[in-house]
Amino acid sequence: MNVFKREMRANRKALIIWSIGVISMIASSMGKYAGLSASGQSINDLLAEMPQSLKAVMGMGTFDLTTAIGYFGVLFIYLAMMATIHSAMLGANIISKEEGDKTAEFLFSKPISRYKIISSKLLASFVNILILNLVTFVSSILMVQKYSKGEAVLGDITRLILGMFILQIIFLFIGTVIAAVSKHPKTAPTLAAGILLITFMLSIGIDLNSRLEKLKYLTPFKYFDAKNLISLRGFDSVYMILSVLIIAVLLSATYVFYKHRDLNI
Image (cartoon, rainbow, N blue to C red):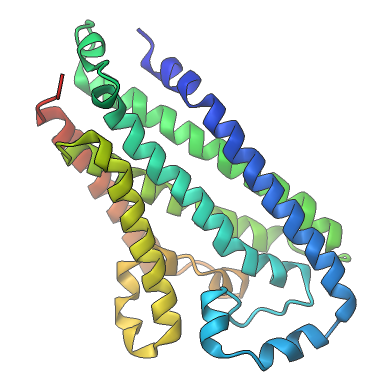
């Protein structure tokens, strides 16, 4: 049995739907930018009068919304949310669904090791998030360049989407670990989504209150903050090292816990 092909077929429809959703969000948002750009500097003047709390919640930060890349910087947080939700749910479901669908006995009765099963599932998950990331990247390049008026945007978008890809991997493995540990497979996607929401809200809380700055290491959303990636600062080496360590620990934990867990057949 080719578990990888089986999982790719099983998640094909969901991947198409998520891809259409991402393309639609980028196209509609940049279309709104085209309408707002006629207002020129008045957009930034209006933002200057908005409360800091509202700007933090909406992810506006210090972006110049009169530029296409500045507007895309605001859009990025919502794209990252979509992509990480997809990753967390995918990771949790692809591990736990055999028990939830009562197909575990059929799958594990085949002459195939648990190690190979989990490896094939993880590879299929990785390919799925890679495809969604590439769809986001190509759509972003096409749409932002269309309205950039000759402004160089390729480098900024590349950094943003690469940061989003690392976020996708982190939350994918958060989902797989929860599914590997949980004794109740149906609760794994909910728990994964809950952790994602908590870390996202924490990132907003840090923007609202500087006294929470020390908690930034607890939320991956702060590792790849759009305003830092678009600026000359780019990627922070500390955050990159932390991301690699987190991914390595989560990946190892997925294999260890899944190998020794008792399956509900």
